Amino acid sequence: MSFYDARLETLDRDALRAHQEERLRRLMAVVPRSAFYRRKLAAAGIDPASISSLDDLARLPFTTKAELLAAQRREPPFGGLTTRPPADYRYLYRTSGTSGRPLLWLDGEEDWATWLRAWGAVYRGAGVGAEDVVFGAFSFGPFISHWTAMAGAAHVGALCVPGGGMSSRQRLEAILDHRCTVLVSTPTYALHLAAVAAAEGLDLASSAVRVTIHAGEPGASVASVRRRLAAAWGARPFDHAGATEVGAWAFSCREQTLEPHLNELEFVCEVVDGASGEAVADGERGELVITTLGRPGMPVLRYRTGDLVIRSRRPCPCGRHLARIRGGVLGRADDMQVVRGVNVYPSLVDDLVRALPEVVEYRVEVDRRQALDELRIHLELAPGASFAAAERRLAAAFRSRLGLRVVILEAAAGSLPRFELKARRWVRLEAEPGS
Image (cartoon, rainbow, N blue to C red; front, side, top):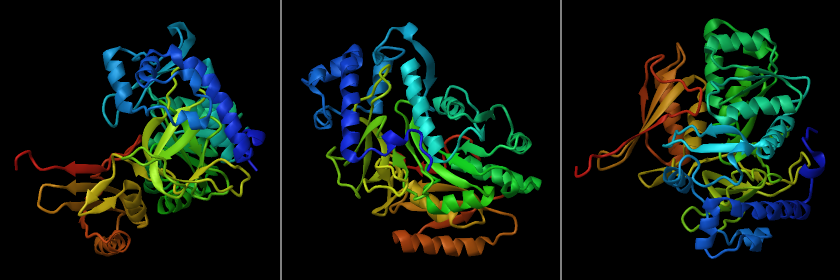
């Protein structure tokens, strides 16, 4: 089996809880150095020293991204979130800003070591080690996930090949020339690379790539997307989830259960009802809430990630007792669309659309400008594919899974955008105020 730390990853649930609570107590000793949390906890009437168990943690108020952004606007640049003098930090990054204003984040050496351990779990969970050559299909820039992906690969002994500043064709040539065995990218970009390879006559299935690791959007734990990734690359796809302000918080194991593990060695993970904030039972959909145990330089307590998950704490066949999330990240709390009374999640739409192998790319429009909402899906198909057949199959899938009628439109070849980072396929068309 592939473990980063077999002793810790196979702790039973009671021992894991003790491990988390020991780290939580160390974290709470540092929290008062953060002006942001000093004020926040004082306003809630909570003494940080009184938080010594996971039960105690539930007394703390949630932290939201909106709060962090507001704090950084009030007290630029870091919003009083730091716990150390500036000279103690080594890395400055920012979020992608896909949902608005970017959030700035700092890491010191201890925080960076947590990133390495968390990515170590991602790679070792996928069976990646010193014999591998890892290609990072990223633009790099100020996004921490790209740099930590490469640092994490080096941490487990792999050779790293960064793919910044390259076209898709150049990246494919580098993957083949350097006999890369591992690809790290978003699932969307991996499928785009496969489409480029097919157009160029390159046979990826016979390449040295044996593992693909994906993050940035749901995909590698969505059954139809996973099948397409595996077929296109002739490799085993693995899922991973993370966030700049939190870390690499989930990873897949070699059992390929479509239920990534929560890395509870580095994070306390709760699942709550989005409206009430109350804990939900295992097996119920809820919003993931994370407390970082190993990034004391800029900690977050009970951070509402906005990610929707279904948690299971059944032991995994791999031997880990870490909790898992069924189907990976199901979507974002703020991405769910209600269309004619039906809850529509992007991950489910992705599963239905990607089940059609002839679909190259797609776009979704939610049109609320008329009396009845309309869901429109634009499909870009492979050359020679029958749009009429694809339309019939997809319409039937939506009726069967959601009981929803959708409008399906054909998009010209090459007309829909391709995405290297997080895909932005959903467009919302709202009625004008007063109309």
